[in-house]
Image 1 (cartoon, rainbow, N blue to C red):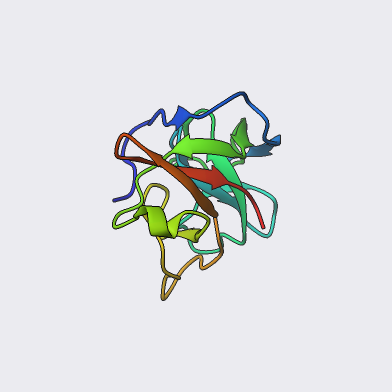
Image 2 (cartoon, rainbow, N blue to C red; image 1 turned 120 degrees about the vertical axis):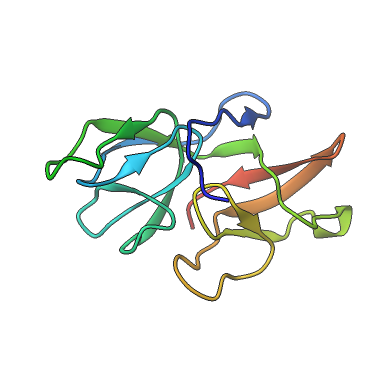
Length: 137
């Protein structure tokens, strides 16, 4: 289910991923902890937004720019390993590619519409929590 508020996913291990800042697209709301992409203009959008072209990581903060026709502030997006729910994942799925259908819903199968790229790989399951190495590909 898509985010409706900021979320703070558990990061596993020391920070090691790349982090880059992108301005929030006009009319867009970004939630902290959400999976984000850039559009063709290099502006940050939620993964499920039409025009999301390249996956850039997990938003480190949020901003509501929904009522603005102007570009919003820069938000940093990171690649790293996070505790994210991957429904149906088992130890047999470790190393499998992970996809997303919106800014918070992960799946082990390629979505039939919208953003269809890989958002990471399942790297482990610990105490029932799945961990995804979130990367851009």
